[in-house]
Image 1: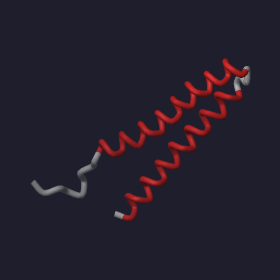
Image 2 (image 1 turned 180 degrees about the vertical axis):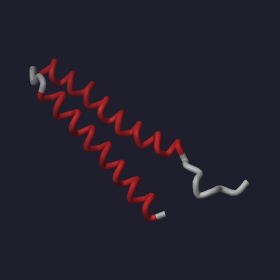
Image 3 (image 1 turned 60 degrees about the vertical axis):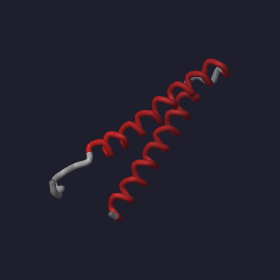
Image 4 (image 1 turned 45 degrees about the vertical axis):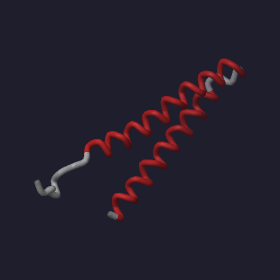
Length: 70
């Protein structure tokens, strides 16, 4: 069966969203650990969530640039 231009690979896009969500989720977990251990509340969580979000956005932009090449 030929593939139309309208076919969308939803798994790829779901994976990209999941990468961003996992990055933020890990940032929350690690940041809360650091906050409790070193008393940095709320800065440990904030910093780790921002790092997780930045990593997820990096992967999103990287995938977008790769898709644009294809």
